[in-house]
Length: 298
Image (tube, rainbow, N blue to C red):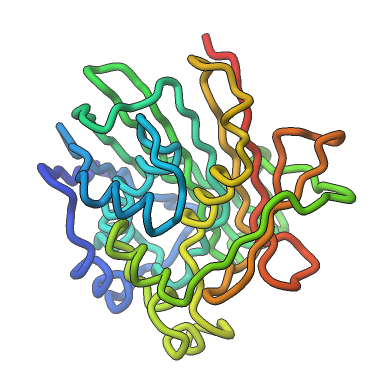
């Protein structure tokens, strides 16, 4: 299978990509064929200072001297969308569920640094639920890897995973028992549109209650990465990590966080001080499961 490379000199636009992702016919995933060799590259990417300032104010999180842990994902998000929308990608966007992420920050990134962002379609795994596939995103500064992310999507369906599941599994997080509320906040109904202006993700499910209902939700939902960024900030977990340490963030998106909802973070320090669960409203089950910890790297 030949390689396809998408090269950008500025942040790509999502408008036409969204249209293509929604309307273009797709061949569908075939385990005997696999996924295409598809990559995207943005050289000398710079942080838009207005977007960064709006990121802090929209999410109501504290400004810091370096890019927040989740911000490189925001920068790369439109690259991901253009890859998903590309004609060689066999899976329709509406059939893909954003399931998990693993982020490793090796070094903090200064807002004025030029970075190279490289994204590619990675591995896939057949499971009982369907097929999981990975986006792998690297951020480098002057050739040095400073930030890396694996984004895991799930497409439900019968792809042979029940009869012949893949030996490798994606990571999971241990459930928390007797977790206590450590912080509570409110997600405003205007968050979807405000955050979309920053990240470029204008998926209809974030834009209006009516559009979200058409896709099976009770109302419009918040962007998961925005809620995760708030949870990391409000938990104060980063204050306990030694300066200069590499940081690993694992997140599992269990369910939608609806706009207009009260949200809580819960923790059981005795069980695992690095683990947090995010709950939406009166839901008895966590909507987002999160782990943030320092790691040793070679």
